[in-house]
Amino acid sequence: MENLQNLRKEYAKASLDEKSVLQNPVKQFEKWFAEAMQANLPEPNAMCLATVSADGRPSQRIVLLKEIDNGDFVFYTNYQSKKGLHLAQNPVCSVTFFWHELERQVRIEGIAEKVSEEKSIAYFQSRPVGSQIGAWVSPQSTPIASRSILEDRLTKIEERFAGLQKLPKPQQWGGFAIRPLLIEFWQGRPNRLHDRIEYTRTDNDWKILRLAP
Image 1 (tube, rainbow, N blue to C red):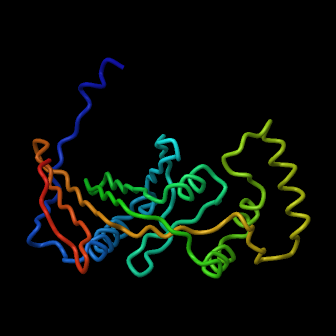
Image 2 (image 1 turned 90 degrees about the horizontal axis):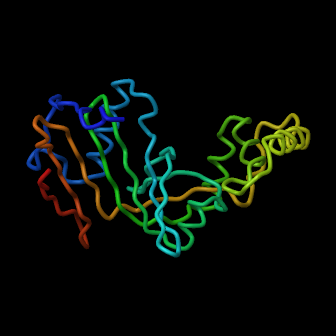
């Protein structure tokens, strides 16, 4: 581990200027996301979601962005999971995208709300059958004695829904839409003098600032 201090990378692929970014940060995100897709990055929709428990303990995990709906960032999960319970208690959260190959990062702070039941059902039934079954099988985030418990539940659920391509959605499963209040775009630059452009939501628009690296 003594070599950790010597690990470093110089960033020099692009730049970012507050005078050239789009006025709407969601549109700017969609622009960058399209470029990440064009670069064939692995899972460019993977984002690190940070939540905070009722007693103030933070927790992070990787989830997948599934949609941008009217400016909100949508992902799906088990509402009884740790993140689901955290968001029920404290809807303030943040997500971070890191696209290493493009030397870019996007950080979003916002408020999460459950999407409609109809929207959750529609997305759930669009998933592969195996993923639908998995949502029924796993009591996400709860302790289990062994993997065999999951395998036994899997067999029972497969038998229960044999032949179906669209399963009913479990009551405890659904989506969250994060309404952004702050979005920061980070572009790596040489000598650690990175470009950071921050948007903060105002009553009717967005305020754009450059931040020191």
